[in-house]
Length: 242
Image 1 (cartoon, rainbow, N blue to C red):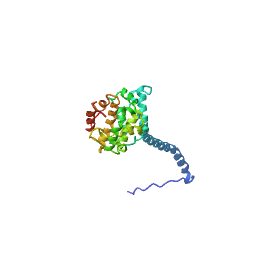
Image 2 (cartoon, rainbow, N blue to C red; image 1 turned 180 degrees about the vertical axis):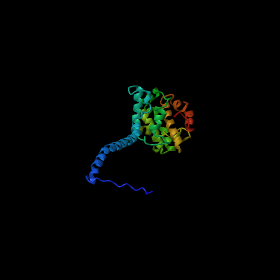
Image 3 (cartoon, rainbow, N blue to C red; image 1 turned 90 degrees about the horizontal axis):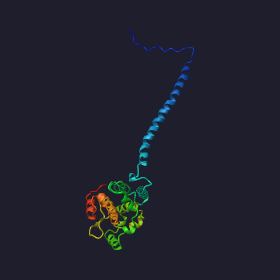
Image 4 (tube, one colour; image 1 turned 135 degrees about the vertical axis):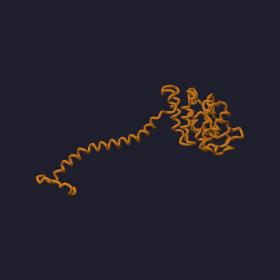
């Protein structure tokens, strides 16, 4: 059997060999828009895929927005707190994975046990209601001279300033013990080294200072007990509802 050979190619002598080119060009031109459309669609899809998380972050609801609309008293209070939180110094400090905004949002604004009335009352607290007396301030600074420079102090001041609307510089001046573990008029007062204790101290100072300013039930809402000492113990051992 003869081996199979490739068939000879028949070229018409009446047409030049380049006669095929127009038809090829026409085919390419016809398919170009489809390819461009396909590439454009693929690029758009990729862009949209990258844009989706960013859009989700932008449209993420304000913590506590579920409590009431922007025209309600609690809605206005929540919005004011959150807007102040974005501008207050120290809002970029991170402790144990939390910023002042994320901790305030999770534990207070979104806290299911924290009532609307408590949130509204926070904005009415004055500096005089929170301020430590001059003698106690002196004791604090004698034990911890750099108390106001500590990140945990600035973190706590940021939360409390956002909630009350009190100027953070004045709050820091009046309450140098904010963020320190323990109590000023006891032997137990120190700057915690571990971030877990720093974070829980910041939140406990927030709730207990406001409890002392007249907002009852805030310790219980976050720590499960209202008593100052017992709630501090719950805080120190890592308990709480946040």
